[in-house]
Length: 181
Length: 286
Image (tube, each protein chain N blue to C red):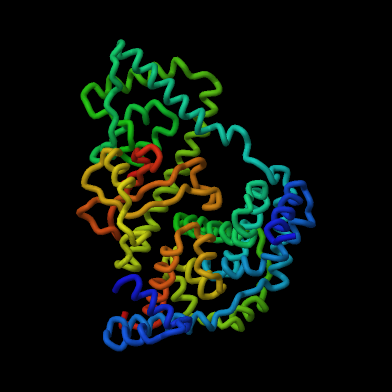
């Protein structure tokens, strides 16, 4: 059975109410979805929220998956758009309400960020990129997706992805102290 | 710097060129190209040190707990959206048509429709359609959308529309009106956020003028002309907003064209969006 057929069957099982099928989808994609969300949102707590929302949307829209792209690409697309949506909300929101539930501080998670080499200045430079550019750079240069796949995830032509990635890198270099561009 | 030069330099920085001679020659002869190469290389080196992040076990547990807790709530089901959600735009469209027909009847047998045009200069005016149709407040907030009568007798027509439309409303129309009002508010949020996002991108990179580097196709130019707006130029085009763009993405919306006033910088310009299917202005920045 091809990957596309397996994806379609897995989602058909989700629509039929098979919880194991949805758990399988989550297990397969949760780390990479979280990674993309973390690089775009720049904060583990917000990335976790975005990851959660991504999988809820995946579940709700399972019946709408047409199989035009790989399941992973489709889920990335939902993840990126969820992040955009949350960034927009953040911008509108002046104050955050106090959450009704706070998980204990997970120091191993902070260590994971450090061990991943996400230095403070890189995080700050990424945060300085406009969200469209940041998503393109994260997907292409950190997650290692090919430009056609990034285009599919972002729903824009490959030429637009190239423009965002190359110009995004230029801005990133400027933020990292390169004044010659 | 031309696009293909930038692409060549980026490819050199990524180390994926089999024959580097052309790219090397380019950066050897121009300080600008050399600086671009250094910038691409610097960014790639920095990003190359960033690896994919994994969830910690605590986060993984929390994620599964929260997702399943939400999914077990009765309102979450995988499947199509409710029927009223899908039919709301149709019901709203019929509501407007019924109102328009009523106006034509009141006009008294005239064979001509009232003139319809987008008037960008009267952004704060409330149009007849906006006054009478659901979501009218949001339409007015969006500023100067289509369906604004451009000739005299506007207030009389407005009153006529209101009366005529109110005579045809039944309970189903009221439900549709409520849905449409909510939908329009979200649409307004979506489009204003899009406009802001475009301006932000341009502020960060002034060289970015269009989404695609090509000249706008004639079809887009014709569509903008048909929308009746002059003094605006095409910035780019956006595909149909999809469900996956988030909660505020309009449902069943068409692709749209982004335009800006000719005499203003894109980074600060109030933008307007033109529906690519109907060629009507759907949003104007205040």
